[in-house]
Image (cartoon, rainbow, N blue to C red; front, side, top):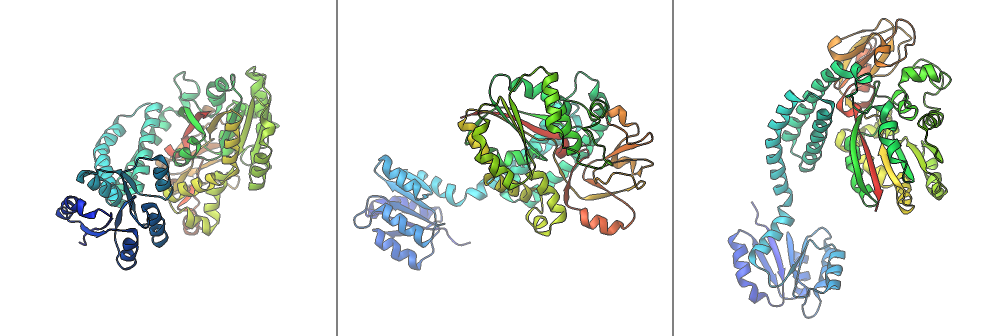
Length: 514
């Protein structure tokens, strides 16, 4: 193994002999220079791993040398060492992207710590993360055998996401495979849990907050005392929220974060309409048949969200000045962003943002998106990149300036489907890959949650003999006809509507402006 090479630049290098001997005893190779010019000449012919640079030298100063080094090799880590504690020197050095800043006199252990922080950081973090997950693995496995409430499932899911985000940074494929197997097992157990309890949640007082109760229980109390921006990002998973949370935190501080459960099907038509109406799909069909569309009905399924919301606000006795906006294109987002000051007098501004849902569906249809979002890690990265450059962030920044409270939530999540499940139905059966409704459905019982009488789970029936089935785990429904082509086309795509942690347990976040 090659020794790590250090270039140490100091006009009083002889005084640093003990430090150099110490580093050489730790198996580092140290090259010394007494001026900035000498250092630049050395760098032109020698590859080094890190530079220790004195700030106060005759001739070319440390800051000037730093600038020249960055011109030669911008990625080379430079540690600035100085006697001065003047603020402007620190700011100049930090602005020039130094790796570390040490004040003389330095002791050998400070130097060693700086080396490990800058050169061994990835390895040390990797080893520590792996070790911590190995310890946590047994605890998660034990939790999986004991978890019994909807809150415990939400906590466990967030714990799995935490470790997924930690392990993806260190690129330990072995550990990641172990985590993936835990996620699979968790989804298997979660499917059984939902199967046992879902029907009771509509009548039980000890039920999770769900799509149709979200507004009344959690949103309404938040909008009574402060002008509020409510953003519903269609199809936003918990891990995606965590991926761009830091960007939001630059403008807002988190007041509350909780998770609620999407109703089944965990699909826009059902879940988002339920949020805005405050009603189950069955009640929506009964109460507002002119606004509700069943799966096989012609026409749009989510065209009346503003009307549903208006009716719910009146039902709750909330006399508010409010506006509703649905954003499905960059042009619409830009237009709202440019005119957002017009919302300043509203008590409530509601924005439905459709981009993430459009992204997940594009992965099915477009080869370039399949490549860009080949797995959950790249899917998160793509979402974050979009958010940082989107009108949605511009709107959030403006809302902060106007002193508005911010609520971010979603209607459902999505799951990367990998395993086909054979299903047979008549030609009127719905087309969704994660749920089906229709007559005479034939399916693998172990792979689905079935509702033979949809009314028991507050869903409307298309006709008297219709039933619903929901795919569990990472299954997707495939017809026996042209089976192989169908499976190869839809495998490793993002779908929603079924029963999984990723689809059903979703974030609800309340933030205050900084």
